[in-house]
Image 1 (cartoon, rainbow, N blue to C red):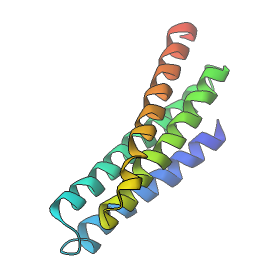
Image 2 (cartoon, rainbow, N blue to C red):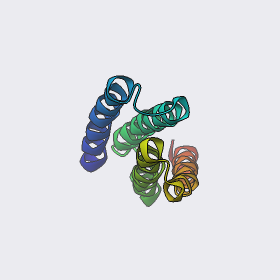
Image 3 (cartoon, rainbow, N blue to C red):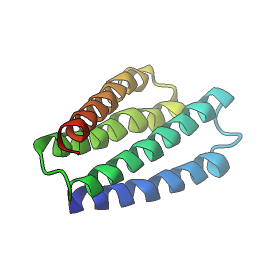
Image 4 (cartoon, rainbow, N blue to C red):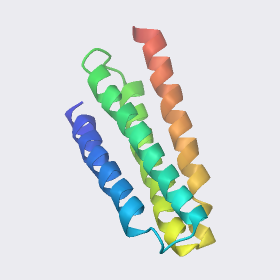
Length: 122
């Protein structure tokens, strides 16, 4: 529980910092498409930071491996999805763009696990 709460705090901080960097540090240095991809990375990181936070909170009420699995899938999804876009947006290296959907799949699995846990235990 505490691990996911702390990881969500760290990711929340990083989301805000990377969002500010994208808005102020990348403007004029990357294309409009690159900035849009950067913003998408920030948005999805923050959305799933909140999912990770809620998962951590719910673990005090629901103690099952489904919750732990959901938390790890959200975290790995953030790293793969947002991380790949953070690298792809300024570089344009297509290899990183191909990792992004894998991160999206991790997000989906995290949501499914969280949903199953909520339906079964609340």
